[in-house]
Length: 255
Image (cartoon, rainbow, N blue to C red; front, top):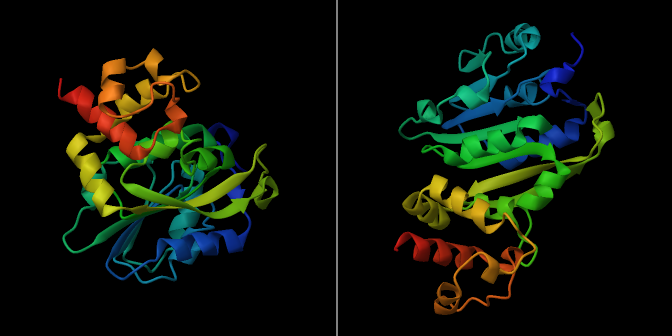
């Protein structure tokens, strides 16, 4: 099989236990529509094939790996190997009555942000998302006030937990940084909130709020608004809870 393609940010997972834990976290059921982002050399794909699901869509942009992925999935009529970037895929195509959408993947570091945003901005947002990403990004996503940041809040609608910390030597070739696998599970109450607000408005507001994370709120927001909402103007963005941020956005939208 071909070597990794550096231009595609390829680092192939070697640790089977990490792959097993990711699949267990996805909690696959027979009515699930599964989307794997980056089939690679099949570390996750081969294990997914042993599960009972409605359909599995595997996306891989490296044409040199498509043949191998098709060969290991031969005989599985409910598996589609697709040579296309997930960033070009409309998640609404996976919407089927009575089925649940779940996403899994080991994500190249250089497109982590676009991929996560792609998932979050979709109208048909997955019930569960399991991703193997750069550890630094996972720590941001899992952060809480008073150390929260843009990433921790942008996943509004999901509860995120750590599955495994994964050292660089668990990949081939080994990247320069460590990784982590995380599980994001849809929180229906918060999902209604983000749908009512609109993800793009929420994301834009967070970019504004966290653009100067170390500056006090009174440098970016009107004092009268903060006082009306009972938010200390001397706090910094990282101190704000999810409820604080939602109330601030709603206040600005009603003007």
